[in-house]
Length: 122
Image (cartoon, rainbow, N blue to C red; front, side):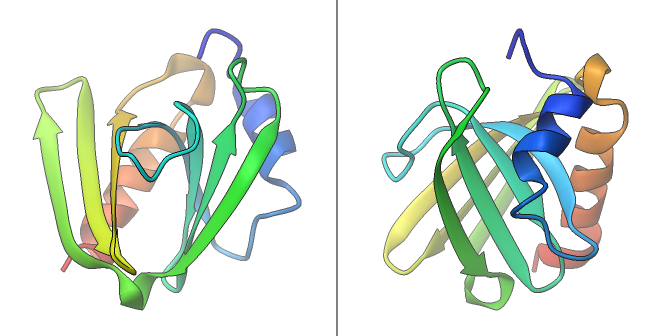
């Protein structure tokens, strides 16, 4: 996360982004994850997970799901620092730790979490 900033995030996501997608940087915490760093892209219809290499400089794998297929969603806010979002889909459990404020990313993290809480969580 040392090298992450808004310009890097935009560069890594530009070819994967769909209209009205919100973006956040996260730490996957499940066995389904292939790396320990990820970018989540989310709109009302789809979630795209971009797994990053060790230095967060390259996308190594892309996973896509329809939001309507997400099951057993859970959201836990951990004080002021971070949130945990987890869900099941197609027999796999996914869990992400999302830091609420990463200064070089501006409001990206907050905007993503607000959208998630207002539009996606059921």
